[in-house]
Amino acid sequence: MEFKIENTKAQMRKGVLELCVLSIIEQEEAYPTDIINKLKESKLIVVEGTLYPLLNRLKDAELLGYTWKESKSGPPRKYYQITAQGGEFLSGLRDTWDELNHAVLKSQNNSKSNKK
Image (cartoon, rainbow, N blue to C red; front, side):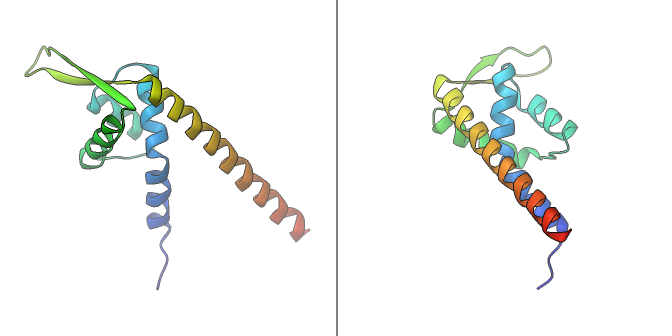
């Protein structure tokens, strides 16, 4: 079986998507298209088909809420906000990310020092 870097990259991006989406919404309430654009700017390319199920899971878990707002062009839009429970969850995700990042950096440094 052949390993392809693109497959691994996609899995890594998918693994941090909840953290990134919650972080974006924590800054200010957000419309899904705005979230997708911010993820694309960060090279965490996401299509709507990926984002909407994630938003629904986060909403069902009571980590996000939403409000409908009138749109100047078309029907009302759903804007997402992070809940208090979502803020606590995001804090835990950030702690986990910091631990993983530290562990990866440490393993890379150990690997480099063993090669000397």
